[in-house]
Length: 243
Figure 1 (cartoon, helix red, strand yellow):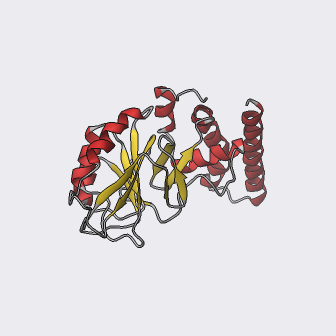
Figure 2: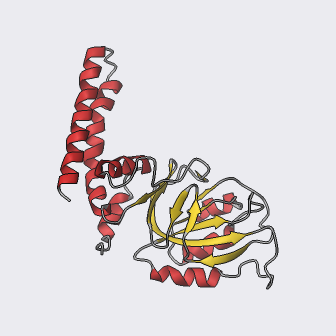
Figure 3: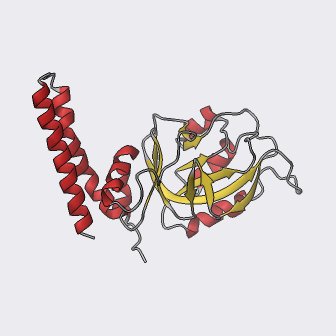
């Protein structure tokens, strides 16, 4: 069983953007490069916000037809109570079961409630609403669009596997998300990813620094790019050999 990720490693992961985290994960060769992230349907509602890192609190929802009990927020009490089962801060992940999605998954009431219980953000395959209010909460949100109504919104399951943006997400999966999208971090390498990210960025800086210098010598650029690739390759070899 993997050791729980320390609070310091969780904080360290949050210092880097999601593409960098995704790049470092690739070096471990533990999954195909075409797997482990949500596709372009899922976009940041507030791209100016910093990255979030937390554990998936999964749920499913429907909005097209009324729930028998008629409670728009039915299931919310159970959902926030189960945040305590996670090893760290929650990121709420909703799969909208309607095809196509009819109405908003979340708004101000739900996001204020999640934030109250320590969640960092919400990710949904359905639309969002109350964007100005949720932005003022400082609550990160990711959706496939925006709709003004919640229609017959109701939660249909909690803490069951879901699929959002092409990514299968299980309760407790470690997620990293920012303006660029959402990726899952395998917990078996999460601590190593956190500590390797700075070195990966240093490798890339060899080429970036040359490009920013204004030097237009093609041979010099090729040398810098090859050195970047050499360093990244060496970093990957070291990370894999240490496992």
